[in-house]
Length: 378
Ligand SMILES: CC(=O)SCCNC(=O)CCNC(=O)[C@H](O)C(C)(C)COP(=O)(O)OP(=O)(O)OC[C@H]1O[C@@H](n2cnc3c(N)ncnc32)[C@H](O)[C@@H]1OP(=O)(O)O
Ligand SMILES: O=C([O-])CC(=O)C(=O)O
Image (cartoon, rainbow, N blue to C red; front, top):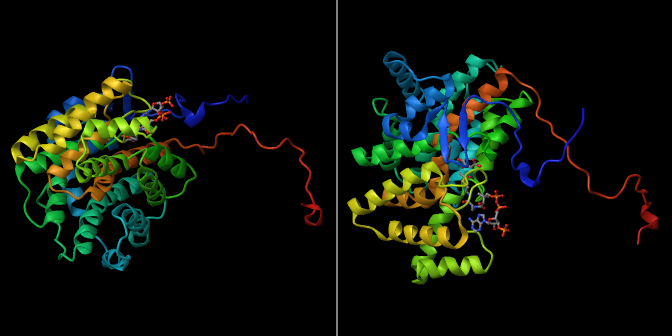
C-alpha cells in the first residue's frame, strides 16, 4: 500500500465514511442525517435530534415518546459517583470533574461488557442522562447547595436546568437550552469525535471513548473556546476597556481571538446565526445588553479586519451568561449535548470497524543513528 503525506493537522483529509453529519464549509451548510440544522433548530428538540443521530431517521410519535421515557428513566447516578464528586479537591474544574466522573461511570454500569450495538445504545442513553446530571450535581456541590432530584417528567433541557438551579426553568430558558443542545449535538469529524472514534476502533469501550472525547473537547482550540470567549469579555469589563480596541491589541500581539475561525467553515458557522439571535433576544429581555453588544462589535471588527467569522462558541458565551450560567460550565454544557454525536459515531464506527492507525512522516535523525555508550557521551 502506498502512503501519502497529509497536511499539518490533517487539514482536508477524509479519514472515514460516515452517514451521520454532512457539512459544506464553503456554503455554510450543516446537516444531521441530511436534515438542515436550521430546520432542526426551528422544529426539533434535543431528544428527537438525538434519536435522528442514533437511529438515522426521525422517529414516529410513539417512538419519540418511548425514547423520551428511556432517556428520563436513565436519570440515575450510582451513590458512588456522587461520593466521587464530593471527594474532588476545591478548585477542581467542572471539565476535569466531568472527564474523571465519566470514566468512573463504567465501573458502576451493570450492562454487558461487550461492544455489541444494542449494549452501546443502552449505554448511550445512560451516558446522555448521566453527563447532564454530573454537570448539574457538581456545580451544586461545589457551591454547598443541596442536590436536586431528577424530574423524569421534564425534557432533557428542562431537567438539566432544574437540577442545576433548583427551580423550574422558564419557557425561554428551556427553549434556549434545547436549541443550544440541538446545535452542538454533532459536527462530523471534529477533534473530540475523531478521538472517540480512534479509541472505539481499538475495541475499547464506549466510556473510554467518551472520556477521551471530553479530554479533547476541553481544549481552548475546540470546545473550551466558549469559556475563553467569556473570560475575554470579562477581562474587557474588568479593564474598563473598549472591546474593539482590546481585540485590536490581541491581534497586534498575534493572539487568537476565541470564538472565531474554523477548520471547515469558510463562511459563517450556521450555528452561530442561531446563537447570535438568541443572545440578542435574551439580552433585550433581560435588560443586560453589554455582553451581546460587545460581542457584536467584536464580531464586526474581526470580520472586517481578519475576514474571520464567529463559530459556535462565540455567541454561546453571552447566551449562557445571560441565562445566569457560570462560565466554567459552558464547555461541560457542550459535552451535555455532544454526547449525542459521540455516541452515534462510536456506534457507527463499531458497526463496521477497522483499527484507525495512520502513519507519520519521519523527520528525526537519519537511520541508522549510532547508539553512543554512556561513558562516551559529552
Ligand atoms: C467547537 C469548535 O471547536 S469551533 C472552534 C473553537 N476554537 C476557537 O474559537 C479558537 C480560535 N480559533 C482558532 O484557533 C482556529 O480558527 C481554529 C483552531 C478553530 C481552526 O484552526 P486552523 O484551521 O488550524 O487555522 P489556523 O489556526 O492555522 O489559522 C489560519 C490563520 O488564521 C488565523 N486565525 C485563525 N483563527 C483565528 C482567531 N480566532 N483569531 C485570530 N487569528 C486567527 C491564524 O492566526 C492563521 O493566520 P496566519 O496564516 O497569518 O498564521
Ligand atoms: O468541527 C470542528 O472542527 C469543531 C466544531 O465546530 C465542533 O466540534 O462543533
